[in-house]
Length: 77
Image 1: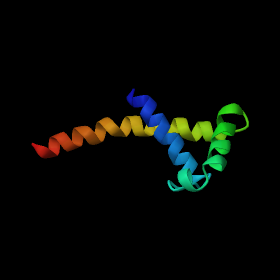
Image 2: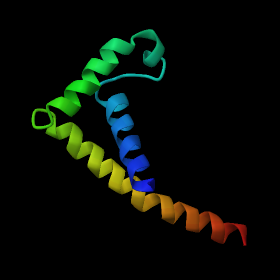
Image 3: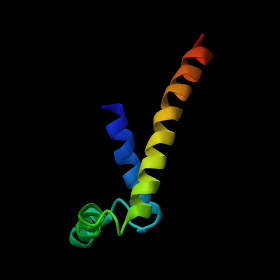
Image 4: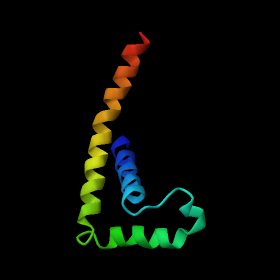
């Protein structure tokens, strides 16, 4: 479950960083955002850079999360 969340976070980082969407675009212009996200899912080969970034960011976040959690626990003691 945590890995799926981290992959979704990776996709969110891609959407914000490279497609240049912000959180208010969900309300302001949802159709354009949905079309762009739909194209990423429907045409994965054409958007392989998006998938590569999403997977790399998801793996990075999945590796960093336990490290930060352990560091926090050690610093509390």
